[in-house]
Image (cartoon, rainbow, N blue to C red; front, top):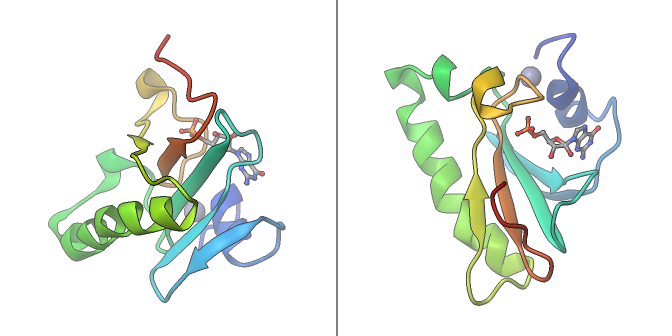
Length: 113
Ligand code: 5GP
Ligand code: ZN
């Protein structure tokens, strides 16, 4: 847990969120500023800054996150597919420095700009 990390605070319930899934290693919640009808963020409970902060120690954790995405998308009613986005660093438009996978879908799915 990182003291000054927004998503660590969400995991610790110090900042409220609309949780859609939690297990011992992962946490998923609704994006506060949704870019589509369904917009979920999936994060590891372990504080990892971004894809750039990954080491081979994280191999199983990352696989587990990826495998969870279609399950969460189905839970959200996205039956015909979904979009996954991972922003990395300032060059990738990452705004929160705790690794997160976006799941977007449903109506109003935006294009890339
Ligand atoms: P990034 O731009 O870092 O890939 O994505 C960060 C995401 O976190 C954005 O889509 C933004 O809307 C979302 N976000 C920022 N602050 C909060 C918050 O306090 N609560 C929730 N649930 N989402 C947030
Ligand atoms: Zn964190």
